[in-house]
Length: 189
Image 1 (tube, rainbow, N blue to C red):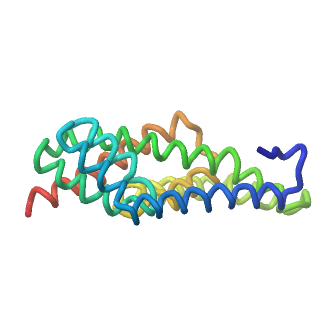
Image 2 (tube, rainbow, N blue to C red; image 1 turned 180 degrees about the vertical axis):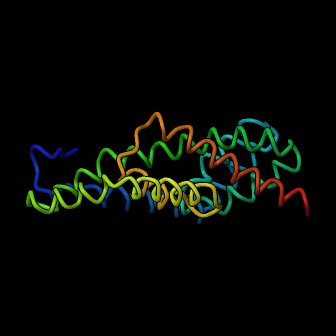
């Protein structure tokens, strides 16, 4: 992989976009071939593992829908609280992969693209405002808790340079609440 020391910012951005494109292709292939549905369906009998795997797939835009269905079915069979707990653990792992990519790679490469020192200073000033941090925390957390895919919320938290020690419990709590809501709706019907 290219690093910021030996490549132009444009090449680094192309590398990032290439990784995203490959992950999109793999996710679409999993959904189109019903391989993901097969994996999630086969783990239903394994209560906690099924919840964990469904939670892992709960985070991505391309795998959210089958994961929501699976989590709802698991909540009816295995209980809302256990499904939410183990599903949230899996979701944290999925969120961590996305978070590390955005925080450690993409945000650095976007900063390099800004180029001049003046533009970098202005961007850093915006990200350093306390209101910006709270707003990204609140909106990012709400997106993670919702059944919507986590990429946008994680992107907001990653670009604000949130520490891992803060992100992990935040991701767990918001995913837990989101999966708990899905389980509650599923068991109500």
